[in-house]
Amino acid sequence: MGAMQDSAGMEMAAAIGPCASIPADHMAFIRQVLDRVGDKWSMLITAVLEDGPLRYTDLQRQIPGISQRMLTHTLRQLRDDGLITRTAYAEVPPRVEYALAPLGRGLHEIVMQLIGWVADHHDEIRANRAQAGTASSSRS
Image 1 (cartoon, rainbow, N blue to C red):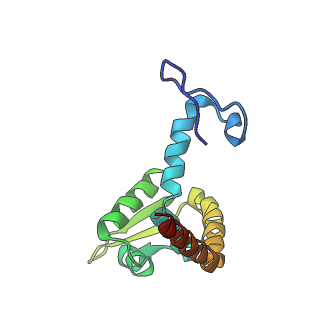
Image 2: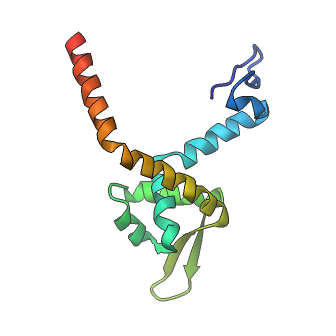
């Protein structure tokens, strides 16, 4: 979805293709949002929150491999974009829950389709990578 730039550095709209209908002045922001919602941690958090609100430790337990720093960072970004909510309860000890906001629920279905596609084609992609690795190592 790359856009061309004119000599003054201003982005010009794409002439054809799916990006052609997007105003040039929106492209940088759209790429930024795609970067955010399309990263693996954002997608996995969006997927996990479908069943209802979860506490931080529950999120960490359900998303193997995510570091505390990355979970905190990604939750903050998703909240800032209005995709999730953060609710702090005045209890002792304090309880904080994260849930999908209406905007995030719309994204959830798309994320689940993408995760499902990757899971369905896992073996095929792994085999293709192995074959490509063999082919490239035999050329060098």
